[in-house]
Image (cartoon, rainbow, N blue to C red):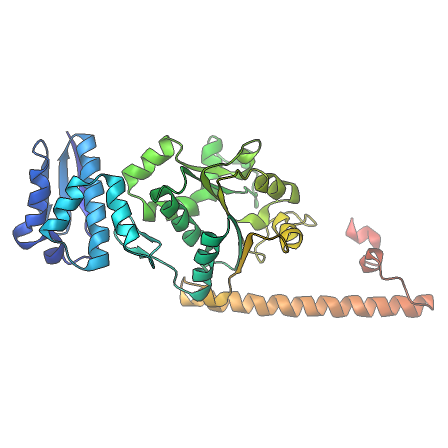
Length: 357
């Protein structure tokens, strides 16, 4: 016998459980070989692991139904008891065109800003979508939600999510643990989003059966990604060869998203960002979607928006100062040489070239 405790959050217990807990009693009656008890906002389930998994699916579907309609009736309970998990999920999603997904605990996941809605619309329209924006604008979270919805709606057979692993301060070789333990911290935001959207048991099943894969970008080399929703996150930290490799993995039945933040490039000095290059190269290619997020789309703490705007102002001022410095240096070279210096890359090098080495 296995035991699991399911906690109900953000629901009215009277409306959800029914008078005298009749809804839970009805579910318990459908599984006579198990024990299902409701106490406060917790539901304790004891029985074989397959029964616990099925009860968890039913309760998750009922929670989603409650958040959509505000009540649970006897008929609703009977429908979810008789339906398969896939049918139950499909019924809720089909009735909610403005909702991307219901979370693992029943919370509604949908676009919160006009640009987030543009992202949702772009992904529905295009097989390849690039999204640029500062931290906190929901790029990763909305993208993962769209991927999970596509999987639940059987639009794809698997989800593949990747990030480039860029070392910052410490070499991976000196970090403790095996390779998975070394790179998992880089992928933690992806795990956090998935855990919000998929019950723990089902997420474990998906990962063990390679229905959901989360891996560093280097693992994508040599693969053809087909019948999959593929997300490349933090793409500003790819090199030109890496992002070209990733984009050319795209199979004929794939949906691909590429997310990045041009203000947080962690590549070594003088290493060009593959994402920035790809945007220049692919900007005019038909059939690719481009979405730009701004500080107005920040959905984290209110201070994050202020921080992003402050850094944007600083970056603009720095660029202006750098341009003025280069112009003064060029004019000084012209006066020193007695003629106009050619405008080449060498004119922008420091006067003392040894300082640049």
